[in-house]
Length: 514
Image (cartoon, rainbow, N blue to C red; front, top):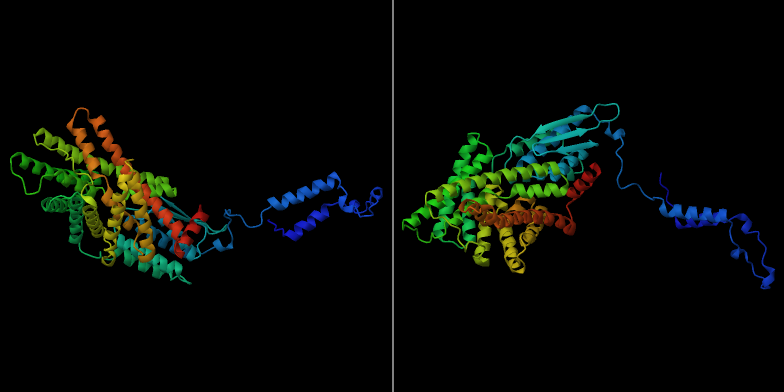
């Protein structure tokens, strides 16, 4: 038990510590002053020790409840099995929908804890891996606990459904009385089974816009913009067919990378024959657009955020997925490059393919990339214009900071911080998923040229590793800088601008669960 001492009580304790015999000491008649010298009397050693002990206890003793409470089973946890199972089912289905749509592990844990607390199910524990979610509930000393596991079978990028889940959870947790569990399950089922906000051909168009935006960033010709867009359409159609056949994502990446590289090699072959399309003097940019389109960076950003939030198992799994997809991309590009070089196709890396299109071209290209990403991620149409706006702002910041330093990953990291801040603010104001805005801001800065240079060096010379290493370091530094910067930006935004009521409750509940 803790005790709270006021200043008066502390003073009384100190006075009580003075021995009674001190008050009975006679005055010192030798000085002739006739004054009461009881105040000058020295207490005994025992009294002094007691006074010091009480004073030290008043300073050290706690005055309020512990900040980290030990969970103890109480009467509130003694809930019915039927109600607990219904709430767990709602939490599991909501968590599955969020994980499958691209939410981070921390968001899923916080959301499930908010739901369970709203419905009176305390003592809930949530464990998340990359492919499963487990929820356990204690129901008192006289009742058996309940533990349920659900496997995440499908993963996609569908921010319209994720936004719907966020809105439903906010409606449940912000109300004075939460809606009936059965009604909440029905509403959630409608969200996860609803139609996409637009048809599939719009997604294909979005990928074409994204690839064309990459070419615009490099200030290339309209012919290359159209060729890159056409290549993106072909890649989308073929990868969809491979997915229907059940081919693994690793091999799908290989096929997609081979398509874009083959188109660039074909254009180089035409140039070697003296046939050149107007303005198509830099076919390498087609490969770069394919790299950025295929490596959108969602997995890397999510892995960085999960690691920072402390979910290391999920972060490791996400990072491994990124590594496998990148390896598939590398195998597809390097194999096609090797075949083209063996056939005598004079492929090379242009020296003017860096971010030298200028501020205007780079901002316009980034805006197109943000627009294409919005369409490929099923963002609701009324908020689609926000994504190109955020992407343009982030690139402008990146371009203005670029002359300040040439440290690998530093400037992309600072631009990622801006993307993270804008992502959190748009989530607060418009309930757009934070990950969508963050990714729209950083996707245009993914180091496609550095990846291509590294792979070209690996295939083009016998001193492959030594020549490819600088480009590989630059690519990894840029990628991790974007991921870490966007994560830090979101964290800083929550501290500077605060969180909404639902997020604050979730953060407190998550800390209590830890």
